[in-house]
Length: 325
Length: 246
Image (cartoon, rainbow over all chains, first blue to last red; front, top):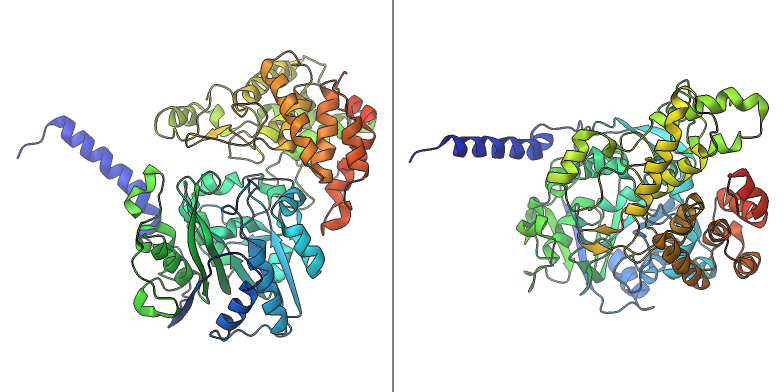
């Protein structure tokens, strides 16, 4: 075998490109290990959005040792923007069923909070996506995290060069953070699940819409820094109707028929990725988070509810993420 | 003026980092008729003229032309970002155009103001959605056209008040007039009043909707919405303060 100068140059360029992609993950950028010995995940078969979801969640939550008595529970849905259909935002019937379940468990207060990434008119998103009606009828407070009081917060991992972010006081003061993502493919990050959902805590007032600073700092790296800094205590992922293809906004609705619950965001996201037909360790932020934030390995996850089998047809993704399938 | 940064920019809020933000444009407009604020305003203008989206650098322009082509736009046309070290977006660019349009002096650095405004206007036209109106930044991402937003479109139309004949401005006005009929939130209605009025369009029906809109205090923190509604209800004075000639 012989190499021409062109081969060597191409190979060298490939090595540089590969190193630039993987370099952020070669050295540990965290200083703690929050992985539980075992993580618990429940996969619930839910075919449609209806009032029955509350009963389904109530039964499933009994599988988890959740202690929220006297605590402030913050439900963080994925409210990005509104386009017709049910594939973009976490469905309000899931969010408000969860609110009722946590109230019943003795939470001091349950509030819904989000800083929509693409839409500055939060009230319009709330109204068009059906949240406003629930908020009024259930008397639940909504906090627009794009415009909340902010606290300069040192990041607890160093994957980006940001070092600190201004974060909403409401998020920092919450006792129990529930990330409630919509299960979607994402053109920049591969997937958007419970950890990517935390981009919504970064305030638009300070960083603009759509939180462009996180894109420049590195999306996968930013997810890790934010999730290391703002712990997720529980996950309720809405995959009744999910999204494949060019998510988070312009993909295609995909009827997955599942809601995923977990006490570990990494286990939740790894399980959701498997439901989507992806290998979770190929998604950089899930792979790296499994070193210090939670468990992605099936062997460390106790699973309840539906059986996690191979996905019949993996979710479509944009070409850059084709290797996930 | 007390919170103005040493570099002339204004922070997004009191106590913010000192690198400056999109709020600087609004502070410049707010200080327009306040004589003791003239030095602070001039320092703000100096900073705004230096502040630009990352794509203003040749390196990033090259990157967007060669390796990063998922978001398609004319890299030669740039405006202003929300915060340091990011690219240009529709709203901060629109606010900066409104602020710099008020600079009448051409001495020193201020001579660049007209060129930056021209470039900013070209950027807005370039980044519009394919059928008119504006999303947050680009009109197309990963080959998919993005939907316009009412507030982004209205703010861009406010900044483009002097570009009425442009076909894209006209189609955006038509889109906004159609879209606003389906909207009841005070934030979007408020911006639509100002954007359409700046384009010389009748806004009585939008004002009627705004007056009957749901309680602006429905959100936990509605200060910005309340302020905007006040500005929209007093649209003639607001447009005058923004330098918009109807």
